[in-house]
Amino acid sequence: MALSLPPRPSLEWLRKTAKDHLRALRAARADATLAQAQLDLARQYGFASWRALKAHIDRPDGRDDRAVGLFLERVGAGDLNAVRESLAADPGLVHATGPHPFWGGRPQALHVAVESRHRDVFDVLLKAGADPDGRNHEYDHWSPLALAIDRGELGMRRALLDAGARTGLMEALLLGDDAAVAELLPGGRPVLPADGPNGGSWLALARTETAIDRLLELGADPRAPDRWGASPIEALSRLGPAGRPLVARLRSRGVPAAPQEYARLGDQAFLAELAGSDPAVLRSEAVLMGAVDFGHHELAEWLLAQGADANARSALGSRGTALHSAAWEGDLRMARILVAHGADTQARDAEHDNTPAGWARVSARSTSSPRCLDVAGYLDSLGENPNPLQ
Image (cartoon, rainbow, N blue to C red):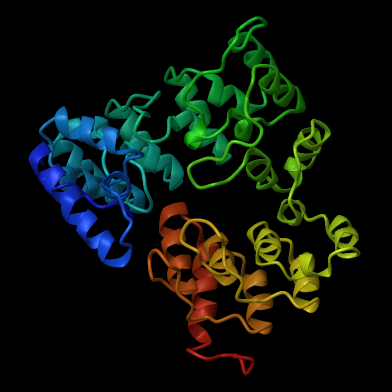
């Protein structure tokens, strides 16, 4: 969860805080620089860069960031009465951006309502005047419509379009609408829009082979990582089976795929082929995480039988374990498989210092998924040391 800025922060406060943070960083790493401290501080407050944080403070709207954060927490929790009371007291909250209640970035309430799948809150926000296009520059340019498409929320998607939401390049790519993409990227246009999704390549949002070809023609970088270090081919492999033809198209254009990409796609046969020349592939943490992240139960069991570590950790983000991932996805079957192979139910992630059961509860709040509560209940029932392998 991003931190909230203090009431009416000044540029003087910002500079002093950055210098204090640099001293703290240098206590752990002597070669830390002011630029690193500034970027780290900006991300703690939900901004993608120091420049974005400075610009926000330089042009404040006078609203207390903590008040906006509290409102967004109420939206994310689906507390309809509290949301109505907040809007009655301050109607301008419907347009405010603030710290995300569950992760980084600075969304508006409509973004959070879509992500947390609270349709009743979503409807109240639209009725209160929320902009269906959203103010997205502080949220990696993700619009409410793009989020609704990405999360498969058809009802919210229709409501946003009915309210006048525009379909830009991000939305057209996510929809797999080749005609709209062709209209937005006509022949002869020399460059793509500068702001790629999540600070990476537009290829990460392609959902058709035609879109991949067009983006490559326009110079989209097939290897550019996003701000979390994920390449386009990794992002597409995270679509699961739907990503298979897209990964194959990138491979046909000379973009290499790592073994974990095939694990995300559930391609056990290809992994077995790779293991013929390098058996260590099957014990890779990234490969097991790929299988777990996308619910490939049989593949995960096979990898564990080949010696994969049930306590494998993600190389990205919070560095949660495989069990954290299963808990976040509400995948009870996968959680049982991992626990049976010795997964530590009390393992903690590196960023939030939370257990798999804790992740399941956060996911239940942020995605409104009752399956996550089933996983949390199961993990709680095991106690602190449920497996003799530990």
